[in-house]
Image (cartoon, rainbow, N blue to C red; front, side):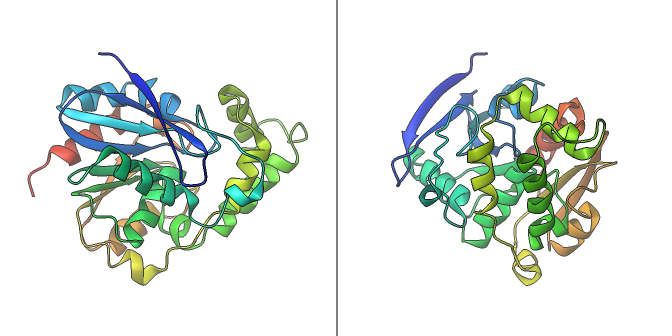
Length: 252
């Protein structure tokens, strides 16, 4: 099954890419920080699994990532721009009945879209806990430290591992730093108002963004799915794709 790549222009003129695989019910999947659609969704088979189950899998490369534009001017990084870009893509594609999911930064972007009135049938927030949505500052500080001290991190430390991953994806450190300035906290009462089925899919050893259990408990229709691994390794496990597929196919 082939993967296609296409582009559209955001409101501020930045060229944004998305990958697509399969036919059927649309599901928009958003990747994590330092990553891109190919690494997060295609390389380890998650997109194919969903496409084989009858989904049209739409996978943007977020601004400053992958094949999308990586401007350095701060004017292109206002608060919540990643959510703005996904609203623009959904409008560009004419999607009205779709599912929405994301891993890590992608999951945080899903939450921002829900907070601002996006109405998918179902949502998946993966690689994410409650704190990662309601208090984005801690993770932003971690990644700012990573990006501002490249080449200086202690071997084996979380910062060292993050830098190693950045090297594998060829990320642009300046553009990625700008992304940190766009983060917006989502208050607990807003999260508690997400009245749609939401799967919280998280590695059993992943607490990088706080408690996945607390997030599932806060969501009125939340379901927690644990998969093997930590924040870095869970995304490569076939159980991640299977949990997303099974949730999207589940009868409610």
